[in-house]
Image 1 (cartoon, one colour):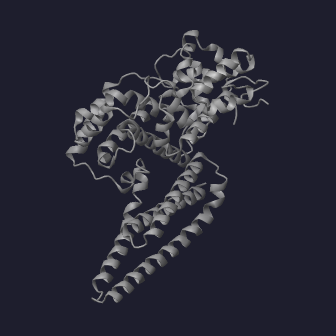
Image 2: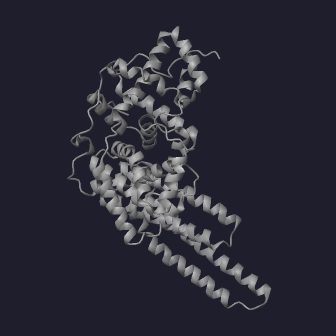
Image 3: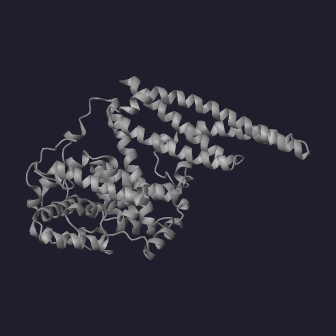
Length: 222
Length: 226
């Protein structure tokens, strides 16, 4: 493999072993590239200054005590967020938004079950009712989305030009939530009667609403 | 992105002994063993099984093998010893709570670090929120440096820490996970929920930005060639 000075950045970015060897060979005859490579590698060596692997037995004793305590109190079931593999480390603060979302979900689920029980034996009637319940869920969802979109419009100026690291963090979080909503909506579109997907979707909307409210609160605090 | 005011020719301050380690670093994927958390590891599966069974000795083994590394990463992400300890402890509690949801889609250690990184970001976010609410607290940059293991170049370490604080979150995460903790791009991609290419790009940008901040002004930089 032959490389020249123009390959430097590409190899720094994503060079395989062979490309690196070729670059090293080229650098033997090119002082400028040799200097670039040395500076690039020096950063990796400098990073070792940030490595401090001293053992800390006291911390383990503390952790062990807390683990035993948690086990004795009965390990709480993982929250919805901890169960969602795409977002296992969400803070307790965000999880507090869940109870209200769950109330909403239970109401929808209760309504669905209630309507379903009153359906007659006729298959056609059954189908019709299912469809109407679904339509109702979708209509409510649309209304909810409209309300959240209004909030999003209010928060847009703060998010577009974040004035603080916290606002940047909110913007990133909202992007993750929007990604999750988009995925869930696609799945819900393919399987519209899957109540579980609807619940997850509603929880995500709730999370987005909460986040946008916090953005607006931060704005008002200023 | 501003300079951190460290204008010494820093790369010349790295001792020749340290420089001998250069070949370990680039290209990154050449060496499979040293300090790399490998996904195909029987010990990893045994640890996961032990933790799933609620075996405290499995958690202890996890701490013995990864605790120092976890604390180091948390300290570099959060800046203080006490917050790093809180993050590691919280991560172990979350692992105990959530182990049933671990499906082996990544190595167990990668999964644990993913929780740690998220926990650190949550702590960081709540710290920022607290700081925004009470304007009396000192700025992050004015924190007193905490005692750490004596390094070969303490001033270089401090300059690096300050420069890292100027990077974007992804760039900082990838740099620390790759260059300091020795994870592979594949593992980092799993932890940060990004693609391997994005991980490589973030590392490249991080190093390019760090060079810009740590080096004295130069007539040419990497990538600026014809």
